[in-house]
Length: 278
Length: 326
Picture 1 (cartoon, rainbow over the protein chains, first blue to last red):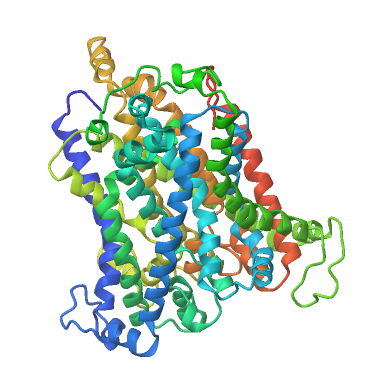
Picture 2: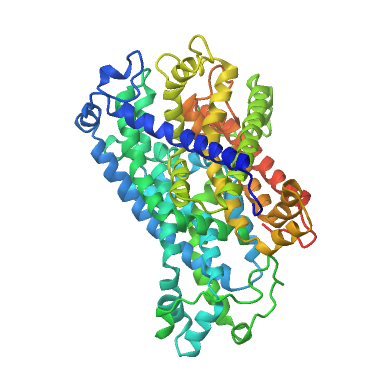
């Protein structure tokens, strides 16, 4: 808040900010520290807060016994393709929703909001049957198609916010200069939109990378599994192997965290402009 | 193509307002384009999104919805006859139903209130520049990059009764004498999943509120200071009214998401012990896994219905005179 800050208020503020930071970062530190402990040291007392002997055993086990490399590649392919296609499709619909007024517009926006209310579980059974008919069960293409549909509503709303922040005058000027509407869109608007498009793609990518229930339902052979499905497999047995689990968690979290760190400013802008304008 | 290389940041008058008269022509472009070509363009650009969402979201949802009125069990696929409201009656008659409903209320309220309060406080404080603010924001943003399921696993490890770091830290601080079996005791299990969800969800509020705060003109605060308004008065008379739309929409969206967010609980407790951390959607997963699609769908329809009703009432109750449109 704007106004004079007292010394006590300032101290309180930074104490809170510090505590919150510690609370946010500690679980991430802890899972990382666990992953680098030798399997025997994980269950030792007193608890080792700063692992003395760093060990890569948990990681090597992951690739030797669980074929984690395949899951990583599968997730990478599915999330990249689905994220990219969903971004392109959402760009088209977001453009129309931002630049035109038409009769079905509020109905379409409402339909997008309703998708957020549907528990994905209600659709799982019929989706499985649909995919069986299309012969796309246990097939990455099938999962990609479903993920595209999952990403579109929110991505459209987010990109619409970005489009609305760019003045109409930009395209109008280009069209007066003799470009068609398509020319204006692709050669003038899209370059300006680049940060928003990157943010939307990253958001989609992370959502697909993290999705669990659809992939568990649609993928059944081991060589087709994505990472969340594999993680779920790790805990379905009675005992969790915490060493492998923490190594797997670190490998799962790291890529998305790097992407978010890289694009967080754009994502913040995208989320807010999309939601504030509604 | 000089236009492309100079991305202008000019503000156009009349674009920032929350409301815009529907269908009113905005400039010459609008008038020129009231043609069938305009309609064709809208249809062509909307079509891919509409087709994908219709085929892979709405069709399965509607098909799943009608399962709620059929006998649809994986164990007995030969008989998928209509049973009317039997699945709903079975849901209501289940002894777990009351527990699940109560848990869902605790889960939603117990998550949203701390998330909103802490998120608001962080946003107010982050509004002022300080050293490393950018880094700070990037760091507290991280939980958002992680899947709810994995967050559940992360906290499950930390709340482990034997080797968990939470017990160790509490004992070191002298707050407890002996380890607590966090996830085995119904009361503490709910507290543990709520802590995990607060860890995850505060960031979203912080981001949304911070962005809205940055749109408040400084002059308003200067005027308030001249009038001698105190901190609380400034907060309730200027800050909150000004970002009202953002607050309303963020709370609405978050309530929907939290209500409909089984991932974290699924990874952390699986709904246990004794259904004590089951919310409606995790219970629905369990029923699906038991193969009773009919009953799970009935639950799903109840969720959609409850959320739709909530959205309508919430938007009506918080509507401004101008009208907040979703």
